[in-house]
Image (cartoon, rainbow, N blue to C red; front, side):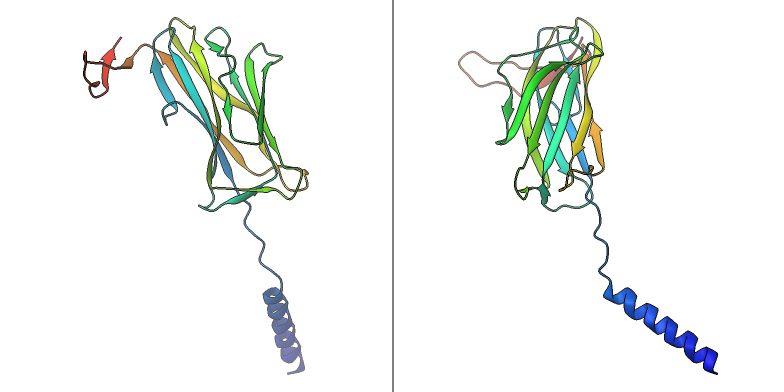
Amino acid sequence: MKGKRLTALALLLILALSLALPAAAAEPAYAMSLTVNGKNEAHVLPGNTVTLVFTLQRTDEESSSTIYGVQNELCYDPDFFELIEGSAVLTPGVESAAVTRIDGRKALYMSYLSLGSGTLWSPRTDLGSVSLRVIGKSGSSTVSCANAKVCRMDGSGSFPLVCRELTVIVGGKVPVHYALSGGTGTEESYAEL
């Protein structure tokens, strides 16, 4: 009888302690998307300019986040793309620099750092955009992320982050815009090349 009482008392104590401990907060998770016209794939002609938008989105839930630091390298093949100097348009506080990586690819390094108690960002935040001229004559190439991070408050690590790269294809179905003389343009059409 005494053993059953002790067991019941121990279980009651464990239950009381588990209720008193705060539940561990779920860790936020993010995605960095690279898009042209809202899509991760673009069909273009040689010489076209694509405006790449880079977006940070919270993926675990639809709520704002306090951001302490973000970094990413938007990597591209210099034989396929040419960065248009001065084309970067960035969210306030985001910095960028054009760099050459050790593997020969070019990159636009971008970063944000809060030196205070962080900044509240919406669940989906466009960090900026940059324009690239397509100098490749055929085939496809990607703009990808490297060293992408959303940093923890103390800088000891980063939150889970996936990158959604952009693929640019020369040829295929490309958008064609017609402007009628003296009138407005027609709806967007596509031509197969």
